Image 1 (cartoon, one colour):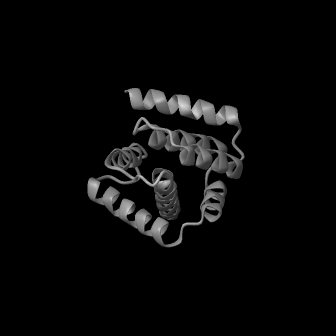
Image 2: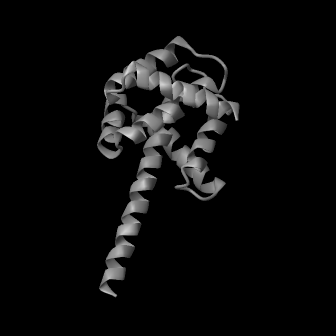
Length: 148
């Protein structure tokens, strides 16, 4: 019985950590979408799709709530260095590479790659210690994901 209690707590902690990671992903993706001063419906739809794929939130209402929360966070107090530090402290290298794929999906979804977006990718690559090759591979994966 005691073992079940601790396993249950461990499961709840893991779920909480996953949701916190999704919150960070949402904030970063919204920052990417806003980087070219044109946050449009295709980018919002893609962010929602990415959140659904990560399965931390089960319905559209929860996804809308996390988007609203992330929009509020990014409007009121986003500071890229703090956000990337928190992600680096929370995610492993493979998860960060997956996050780069998500970022490229947001950039590529409107079929335009703006100078501000490429500048942001370069900046964030440095903050996450991602090589140009790793970023390019993430971009190719994003293109394939968008082609589906």
